[in-house]
Image (cartoon, rainbow, N blue to C red; front, side, top):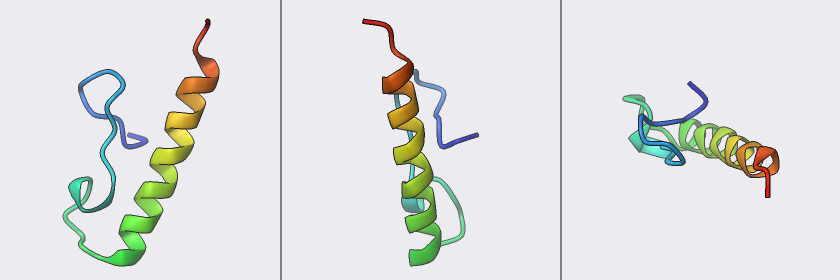
Length: 46
């Protein structure tokens, strides 16, 4: 869910994340992935 893979810190997007191959779907998946990566980085404690 939210483009996460089973490897911590690794996300999948675009044609790698869905059997439905389309530009619109790849853009959507990339957008969600970017938001989730941003959230993970924001939540990190330094």
